[in-house]
Image (cartoon, rainbow, N blue to C red):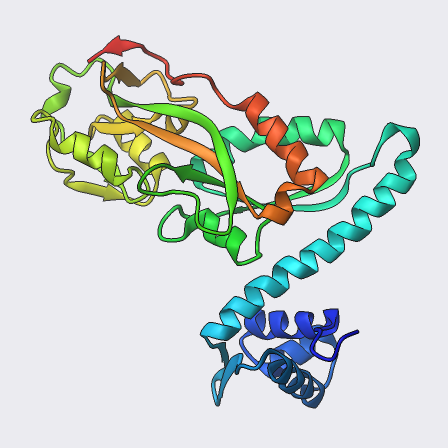
Length: 307
């Protein structure tokens, strides 16, 4: 090993410090003494040539260099795990190919986790029963699911993509479905446009909101909820109208009427993001295939009236 090479145990140490927020917490999780953790970090910082953690009475926080190092450490450790599982799977698979096994970490926003992932995961487990999906629901705000992948916390993220939310530098991905937005209101309401507009923070890209601004019949949202499930509940209860994407309308109850917004309606691209190295792993590739097969081909609704 070259003088400045980092060993796996050094990578695990800095990840443990970042996860626990302290040297003592890392020591406990790794079953080491605190002095051993401190010694390991000093050696790592010397090899890297940068201070990785700010030490204080309240714990340890990664510096900017530390955040970058920890993200790469998570990804390297994940690749080491993949090396073992894929090599072992290839040996056990014989002429039939590699047997896929082990954890597959997935980050997804709420409606994707509820409606897009389940059929894909069912098909994946049927083909590869040794795979153990671990799904984390992440709000698609700020760095969102793509940030989980970039930071090494997820192998693949189900994300909203587009001109205002492109695939981040250093990651790769693709579109799974382009879903239309629809006008949603209580079924049978005599004047649904008179109802207040309800919205939630994850709903739209800036492109969609620009489209909204050009529609003089759509008022400013006066009600904000936590997520699309709460929006649908308010509409179903007769309290509001909304503009919602198709995925959020999967299984909408009969008390909700969904109307097509017509030509020029906004759409939302839902896709996947992963790391370049992750894109080459068998488990991620297998999930992408199942996601493409499970992705709906159009709007999911219980009514198809043109607005």
